[in-house]
Image (tube, rainbow, N blue to C red; front, side, top):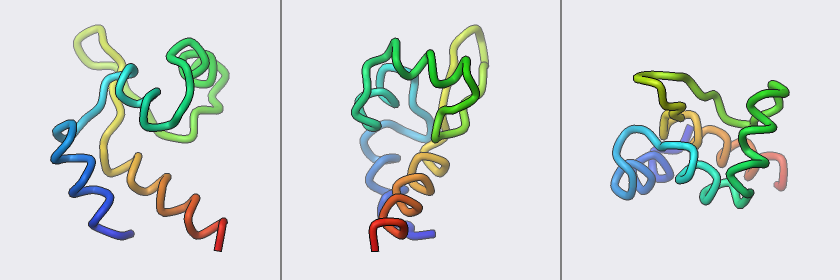
Length: 72
């Protein structure tokens, strides 16, 4: 996995993203993202902590790396 996407995302958001931020990075509406999570089709792993759902920047960076590999 490439470190550059991780560094860029971590610099922008910290080590985790809330659902609003994740939706922006994935280019989908927040409601669409929640529907994907509910249907277990979200391309990025999420978790609940303190009553909020989060995604780790490393998982999002890995998703971007996988998308790039598929496109090549």
